[in-house]
Image (cartoon, rainbow, N blue to C red; front, side, top):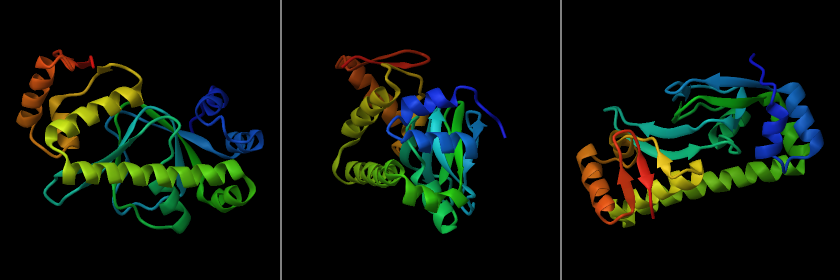
Length: 214
């Protein structure tokens, strides 16, 4: 089990709404796990002994067809919890999705044996879990609404703006192919729409990144 010396500071920064006693319990009873970019953190058929809080990095959750086509669901960033890991761990169910570290990612692993006590004893944890379920459900609804009702140009603009907001940077280190995979379209379509957005002065395209200007 790998320890991080700055976990108290990270908990205060991203989970400051937790009661002091809850944060102290998490420090005593839980451990951290680190993943490199590209590592799978969750696979279909996997059982969970832990729920995960994101302390550092970024995690992509998606489903994959038998042909290898990806259906993007949402990203997790520091301050988020993996709702599916909470559900699967609590109910001892198998995962039906993939979760992959986008960059170097560290999570706090909460043993399944703690889940019931956390829900009973700590109101902040109880409301955090409810908010986690609500937020992830709303993100899925946004994805479904965009697929059903929005054009690809609107979906692309919303996608890039959310990256800017989540990462708190106007410089997006993401490839055209990665965007195409997340939006379930071709790289050629994304490249054409990005060029159009550049002509409209929404973005600036560089060889290694995209700059958000709007």
